[in-house]
Length: 235
Image (tube, rainbow, N blue to C red; front, side):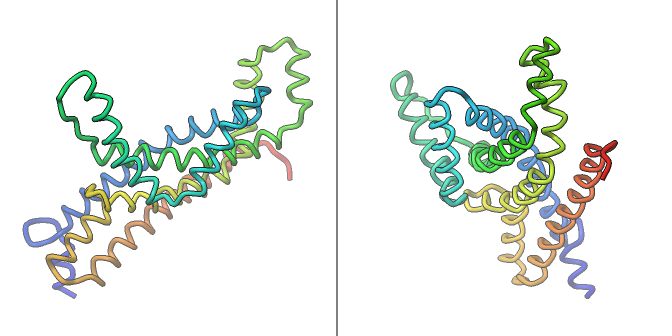
């Protein structure tokens, strides 16, 4: 027991510092991905409701592709393919070599996957709002922007929040995928610790506990947000 505590402690004799660094990168990766994925998902949901057939078709193709392809494959394609594409484009202008960072590739890959799934959540929420809400706003002389901001968006948040909460918890776990592109997230730091100490059970259980605490904290916060979004409603 004392040996386990020593290995997990902070300082020169333990791996607590390294695990904390990996945890911080995991949190930053998830928090950076979240707003990008939400904005893209919202825009894609709007495109799916557009009167333009080509816009609806493009949005459906986007969601079909990124919901159907495994997240790990998407990560590899963006990390290695993005590097190749960037160098090809830059080759026409300069011979300078620019390397795509693993963090940027991870954010892009997780964002496109998150946006594909979140767009379906937003689309279902849009369909849950009666058409009379739009007609009433039009009768009051509200513009489309005012209708969206004052009438539709508050209801949209309430309807979409449960689904988006589940996607956030999935995103927290999916951040572990970036370890395969040598990004020093929590899982990679854990693997390094295991390789040096030969204590796989101890460190992987510690990583499981950390992910569990993250999920538990997120669930508690999301529950409070859900209560706030549904305040004033009668059952």
